[in-house]
Amino acid sequence: MYMTGYLFMDRIEIEKLLQKSKELIPGGCQTISKRPANFSDEGWPSFYSRADGSQVFDLNGKPYTDYVLALGPIILGYNHPVVTERVKRQLDIGILTSLQSPLEIELSEKLVEIIPCAEMVRLFKTGADAVTAGVRLARAVTGRSHVLSCGYSGWHDWWVAKNPYSDSAKGVLAGTSTFTHDIPYGNVTAVEQIVDEIGSDIACIVVEPIISTDNDYLKFIREISTRLGAVLIFDEIVTGFRLALGGAQKLYGVTPDLCTLGKGMANGFPLSALVGHREIMREMESLWISSTYAGESASIAASLATIEELEKPGTYQRLWAMGDRLAAAWKSSANGSESIQIIGGGPMPQLRMVTAEGELDAEADHSLVEHFLDHKILWRRDHCAFISLAHSDSDIDRLIEISAAKLQKGEHVV
Image 1: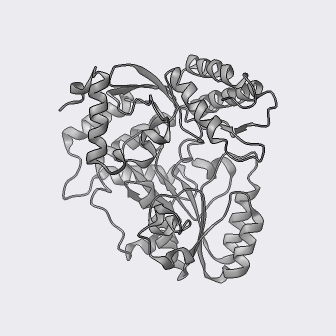
Image 2: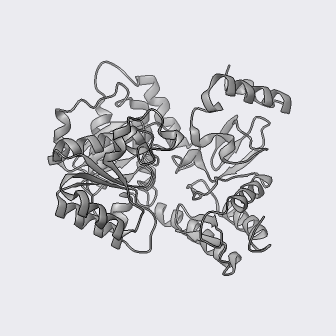
Image 3: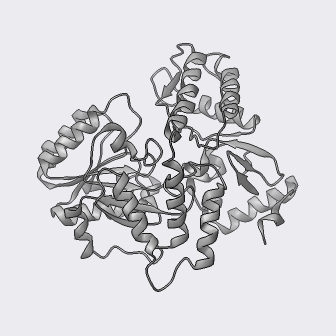
């Protein structure tokens, strides 16, 4: 059935569709982070009929201004005309054959041009695959076993093993957790302690850069990686192409040995990349790391079109201006409340509700999501707001106004 067959369904029909999804799909949704329970207990639209610009339309045709943006990949806006047209042209040519597409070389050249650490490129379909390939490559190059991990890097065993006793780690071999060590962002002491214990067997340090007022921690990680002879991997699946054209490494002036790219590079088409220094990347020629769909050319065409749009003058100035204006307005509305944190800014600012101990206030956070949903705004619990080039000044003005109505009610915002 074409998507138009799902338009203007009544509440009962939508409930039946939701029930069918639970019967056919474990968890009811193909992506864990998109499960309705991760957003709202009730009233979450769950299904879309179409998306355009900064808006997603539900099965009743109602528009929602979206700050989840498909968990981050949409940076130009939904259904961007330049990207859509480029993909349509590629569909007419063919997107997957027994031969290689020249677009693979064209995109690789572009990534080498704009990403500071990139000298060679391997394409993948998901961020988790790209990061896992980087970890395996680092182990192959160094002959070492242990991985220091800071941030979220997907669902593969090496990363899930950081929480070996959680239900999410079921099925991961017991010994796997021995080799992966979680390090909180900015915690120099934790890194030094692990280094003292196993420094000579650290294959790589995987860091997900975040928006920060300084880059001292990233410089520290760079220095300690070099001293240990470990491979430094920046997981820029989220920050790549979103904070700057060259990613966080370009913004902060700290260059890793390898980095992964993904969510911002193709405006929603499935594509990721592992890029890095030639002397390390060449080792992949002998490793069995491969995917049938890595060279699928519709997504590569989408990426080339997306990057062309991002290269236009003023692009990142506009993204940062919108996000910084939003963060400043939140700070003003919070009026010094200790129960409200404003983290970062630019293209991915975060509004966080916290307890007196500084931990997430789940009840207040849930109330905030419900408040936005009442005003037809899609918002993710305990996460940054993603801003795209399709968001208008009026979108941001409206979000500021609706945020203020909630935040100015008092510290607990419930």
